[in-house]
Every structure is written in C-alpha cells, then in structure tokens.
Length: 200
Image (tube, rainbow, N blue to C red; front, side):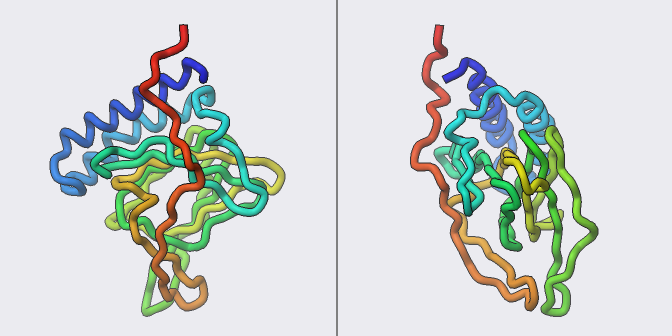
C-alpha cells in the first residue's frame, strides 16, 4: 500500500477532532459542514491515495466502499465508484454529508417534494474533479447522482454525519414522490487499515 494512504489517515484524524469538538451529533451541523469542507477539498485535490480496491467499478451497479467508519457511528467516509452511465435512484440521506469528486465528474440533480409530487429543485449541477458539495436535511437532502460520462469511470469521496451504510433512509418514486425505506450497506467486505505503520 502506498505511503500516500497517509493523506487518508490524516483526513480521518482531522474529522475525528472536528466531530469531538462539535458536541452532540447534529447539534452543530453548519459548523461541521464548514469545518470539513476544506479538508475534503484538500483530500480530493490529490488523486494518489485511494486504494485501488476501493476504486473498482461494477459492470451494472455503482459501488459504495466504506473507507472508514467512526467507532461511535458519528461519521463515515465512503468512496463511490461510478461505471459509465451509472446513476443512483432519487434518494435522501437523513444526515449531513459532503461529496468530493476525486476522478471524472458527476451530475447532481436536487429534488423537493411539493404537494405530494417530486419536483426538480433547480438545474442539474456538474461536479468536476476537486469540487465539493453539501447535502443535509436543512440544506436539501433529496437528489439523484449520475456519472457525467458514458465512456469512463468516475470516483467521488463522501463524508456523512453517521454510518451511512446502517442508516435507514428513503428512495423516491420519480413520478409520484412516494418513498420506500432502504439501508444501503457497503459494497466492500474489507476496510483499508489506515493505522498500519508506513512502509519504509
């Protein structure tokens, strides 16, 4: 494993300190988002640290690899790997989150539920490598994300204010706005050992 994994370890330590200082989970969402945006932008500015196993696409489904899960479930860090043309359903998160694009580009379409119907909330937004965007129940939590490319893989890194693979959230029917609960889990069975001694 490359010594560049140290970037990831340092990011996790930074977010751990930030969450430690924020008090009760969710009580300081704005401060957490503001404090974590710069470190995530710095992390995705360097495409030399993500373990290759956490960047492999699936031919049919986008992949959600757990990179780090806080022992107290206060936050989680995930790599999303998008094969050509892959996209999520319309979904929510129920917790704050930050999305940083590492490779390629993503298209983010926000939605709102209005009079029982799902309505687009603004235009699609293109997020290119190095860009960071936020989601949360207070800022807008319902969206669909897709790979901006039909001929290449894109990879993003998502930071969430909880263990996103264990949280019950919702997918939305694009026509009716009706919701169905789901728990995403993770695509990977193994998590990189961030705490292993650096190679000489």
